[in-house]
Image 1 (cartoon, helix red, strand yellow):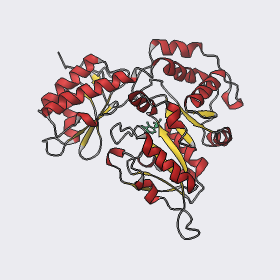
Image 2 (spheres, rainbow, N blue to C red):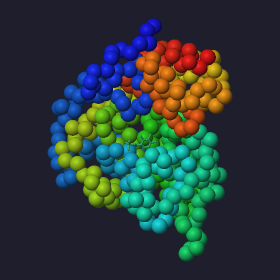
Image 3 (cartoon, rainbow, N blue to C red):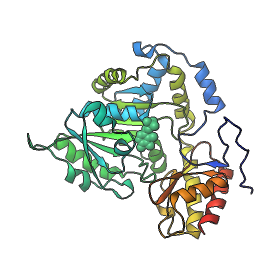
Image 4 (spheres, rainbow, N blue to C red):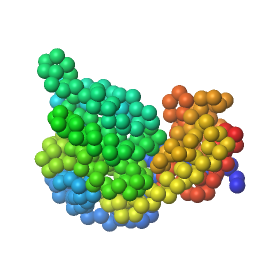
Length: 359
Ligand SMILES: *Cc1c(COP(=O)(O)O)cnc(C)c1O
């Protein structure tokens, strides 16, 4: 198979890749999704008059076993609203040190809401109950910052698509609830955890006060996330969404893409998982220290480079020269993410290039 570039980049045009594994945010809306968007009934959602947004919100709330939901432009906004609802200025949120809310939202909880934070170390982002429960600080009165919220990320992005065990979540939930500490789930890729494990979305959902889910990652919508929780919490979140600048008007045209994705793009996430697994098995066979296929749980593969001749930047560049786009994830790892627009042929090409470079 040829791994040459599919076509040379034209000026002003995005470069075409044989396999674009940079992120699952890169998906193009399918023709059927575009057609669903074009036909969506819309209204002014700031006045609560967009029927397509209302349908999406009630559908996602139901899937996660909660009363209400709120459509947001980004996952970061959904997480920031979730944190804002539970944590007063000067109180703290705790999360693992690789969490998206701490590493990839540019300090928004501190900047926008005066929220302080601490973190625990977690191997590949995996939740071990003793870590948050040991870190959580309650009842210290005027002497120490009080923990108001624990954030769990499922699947774990920078951890490499790690699925959080439901038992561990339940153990944290029970102990934190007794201590009066709320829980928020950053479920940007909760769909992947659900498809990989068969655990119903609502089984995850009911262990949390609020949940954010992304429609624009593996589900393939161009834009949008949803925050889920009680009717009372979502009414407050609606006020803060407007205050954060996220009140949108005839946005049903985007929500329609989310509804279409829920109908057509959830079960197929299993294809992404199978392709990621197949890639990891092939690369692991020639370079066992670089990737252990047993650690690839969903659509993300992390290649660990210590002991090889590669730095992340050099490996990313060498793969890019052969048409495969990937991401240097920190000082010693390269991340590859499977999604709607990476098929079997693209996976074969990635296998060929990486087994060659890493053997
Ligand atoms: C992508 C992502 C988000 C949200 O990102 P936005 O770019 O703001 O939509 C939140 N959490 C995790 C774990 C993510 O991967």
